[in-house]
Length: 500
Image (cartoon, rainbow, N blue to C red; front, top):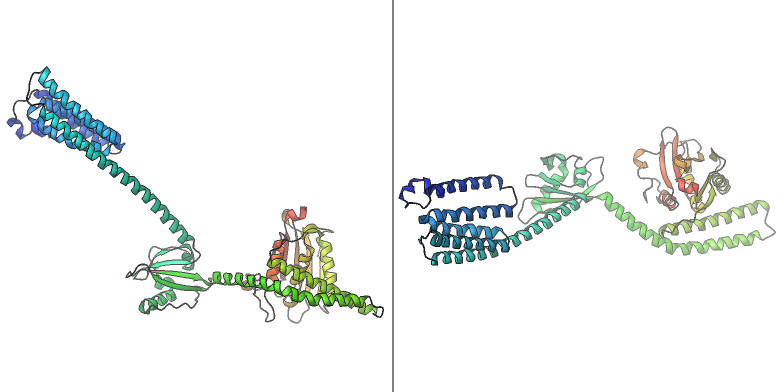
């Protein structure tokens, strides 16, 4: 505006300025400083740039009022907006301070003109009125600026909280074991969490069409959209995955976007297994009393018979077997109860080589094998470990029993070997080997699942309980494939158990 007034078409219509050359130089310097502030102040600190800007405005504006008396009123009026803008952007004390500096500048310019230069072009009332206007504008805009900054801080905090909640929600959805899909009206998948991505092939694409990646799910979604009927029959998306059950719901009322939840039936099966095992534990506790009563009666009767003098030596050996097996049965009941109650094992210092040989001797005495064979071998004379011998005896019984049932080829006798040897890293292991046809890969992955069995007379709990008993002794039980040779179930004892 100063450049327009001094160098524009209206410059000739102005009365003679008090200091013409000084006013022109002042206008050019003011324009130059404004250009510099515009170029370098946009990325700097807001308060610093505001202070520099209002300082330049007051300095050049008051000097221009003194140099151009005809435009002094207009310049003073325009400075009201500069003072108000500064008070809006600066803290309250700085905004009021700027207004006071502007008032002081007007007052000094007025008395300088009146007293030093002895020229009275305006009355004292005019600067006083502008002083009141500056203070009023600074006060109002300062209050408005304070409220604006408070609202901005609140909005930033709410924005950060909202962004944090969005991240948490995305993390929860992404980590859900249930697959989640967002499908629009054209059956285009716009969102999929990790579980759903795995079910859809394992790779995320920009433009996924549900009709192409999972046609059966697209068909069920179309049926649900037409009649609102949800088909909850499980289906298998591909041969490598378990069955899933889809559930549909609209994202918003009246929206064509649909949320699809894909429930993995294997997870439901695991929950059902947990409930069943918990029920089995409670049932075992109630059944233990009923089993122990006849066992106690059998053991007592055997003891009475052993005291008789009329028993032949061969029959006395049978009584010893009955007593031994009754005691073992009572130990099995204790182990099952301990498993249900998660009772810790009672480890002892045991020689694996001697324990395996003793197990074979006792097993052959109580279970005549006829043409089958059971033997114990070892690469060391002794292998000391810390283990509960009763629980390890039960584990070996389960493994040998399974080997006798399934570890034989058609028309051939079973050949079972229990081999004890050192394991890597200072541990020990027991291998129960057979010469059967082996276990198919598909069944091998489910061997240790509770209630899984291929026999119509089995319960599917033998290997599961055996593995849990091994875990109770800090050992592991695993199936080791031996193609063309047979099967191998391996019990590993860590180095800590061996050193103990």
